Image (cartoon, rainbow, N blue to C red):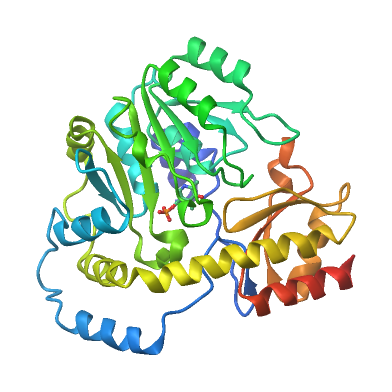
Length: 362
Ligand SMILES: *Cc1c(COP(=O)(O)O)cnc(C)c1O
């Protein structure tokens, strides 16, 4: 029986999938969660009450509005989406990356992205049978290595280029001049992934319309609605119309539609929370920089990339865990991320707990 099962798996599951290990999300239990770029704040109690009132009215026996027009309308307003652009919604921006890949995939097609970068670009490229090419960033400041990017675009003629602005896990914004040059040079679609826009105080949303090959991707996850799973892609109507063909019907469920519409009408609450996170980002940066053995990179996102002393990243990660704090250990990714840790900005209390624990361990 077991041999038979093995043979079936060997024969039918694609070799590149068999080689993978599944995306691992660690158990967080009672730990202070500073590992996943979540907004640490809940909603005020009155808002929760009002929201429950909205949820009570939802007919869950019915399929959702397939166009999710209510959410699209509030998003257009809340995120200042250009009127001439179209909007595609995904079950998180991860699903949008998947839709883009499915619409353009082919074994001769290349997905290109700077590295270190967001892992889903590579993963989804692989899932959809495309070739993935990463181009190393400049190791000193994680800026784009423009000669290498130009060369890779020329050589690979990528069907899609992903540029996270700011980048995850390095936290920096790239020069607009460099991005503009790459958008002009790229033969295919360029997706500007603005997952961290609420913390960046920078956006390229107003470039949509100037370049036929440019789309901007956003998500409500990092601003404080990670549990809803809602991402959006903004681009020329002709692109969005094609990509929409691979979208599964009803991909945005009724609870997400109603909750996102409700939440975005109370956007001020999230603006206040994200402003507090930006303030705390400065506090945490300064406090960690006081620990002389750590190198803290500048960040325009809601996390900090920190380089631990030689070979000590895993020890610090484990030490923090024993002190009740979960962060992300990136050291095993190797390359430029050797010795690196990623810390999400928490509440003032959580951040204080982080400093105390770090000072105790180091
Ligand atoms: C977190 C993240 C996403 C994923 O967002 P979801 O909408 O939660 O799927 C996309 N891109 C980058 C760069 C991210 O860090």
